Image 1 (cartoon, helix red, strand yellow):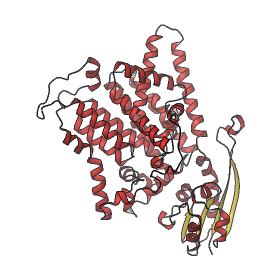
Image 2: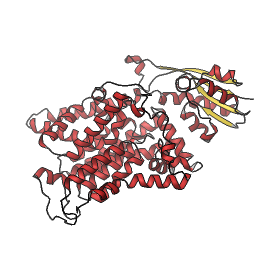
Image 3: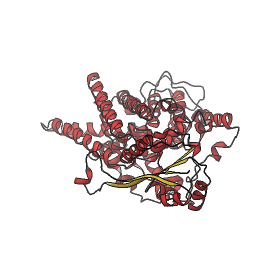
Length: 493
């Protein structure tokens, strides 16, 4: 089995390295913004404790971010590989057959694969989640709760999983607050899931449970107080689009059922759904099923209502990708047991994994346009290096522009959706201000075009239009046309 584990991890690492090389930027703007915030956090310490950046993520990434964007992306790949290995170890703890398959089954989740070499927050969340699950399964409840409490310092889903975690722990608490049982009550399946809880389990009173699961939030508040002096800084740094106004619209109640192919895999969703239903029917692996169902229900409600900037992304479920992988393994084994005598079973299994790998590769190449835009941004950056001008301030519409120019993000004014206000701010920028803009993100996010910037007193230095297809040239064989974009370099003399 160890050879299979090593081979799976090596293949996943090779795929991640190739992905990082072919996609120098992310499929979404969030990753670039997270990187920029982490790179400059030591110059602006309040960046460590804001609500959107999240303290643990920003702190950990602030170190590789000092080296380069590619190094930060490889740091994520290391986190993804460690998450896969810990998922395999959890499957072993739960005594699930073919535990080594958990590694490909997590990397073959299209959303997980797509951001496995990115600077999104979900992979770090998934690593903490599986470590906390392993501790909980081993009966180390206090350690598990402390690790689980850190989830909220990486992503907002940590709050909901902390509530769920409290329910798990309190369900197992004996009535006496001082009694440490020497045997684990329950059915054989329940004992198997709890693993070796006997010696370290202990009892935890409800109040202590709340305190342990609040550790991460308390450390966040304390850090914010120390760095800013504002006891309400977390509230004051609340993102403006995290409200009840449905900033990104609303989705249907079926949104995440329709996105299951992106979450679990186009073909692997079949064993995943089977594993979920088998586990629910047998009342096994409750921590895994309840984790998935909790996030499924919470995110469905948020998307239907449009609250708190919910955009309906499949990548949200990377947070619990270890649970999805193991439930898929349960379904895989269920099908395997029913067709154990079939001579075609090994061939179908290999074909399923191979086809799923192809799906992930195509999905990653098609999913987002910003990775394609990076080629154009790199070309305009190279042009400016050959035709330099002194820069006093730098303004940009896409995060990767600032990644390449490596300027302090505080130079950029706060641009919102108010066109007149944004143009006025640009007009007041000093001489020597360079603006790197595009014809898509700039107008869509900030309602400002290149012509508006020229009207604010800037000279167009260089502009070029692009037709950007994926590396696999999907524009030739799918209904998705190549991306057509135009980029601008504007300067204030």
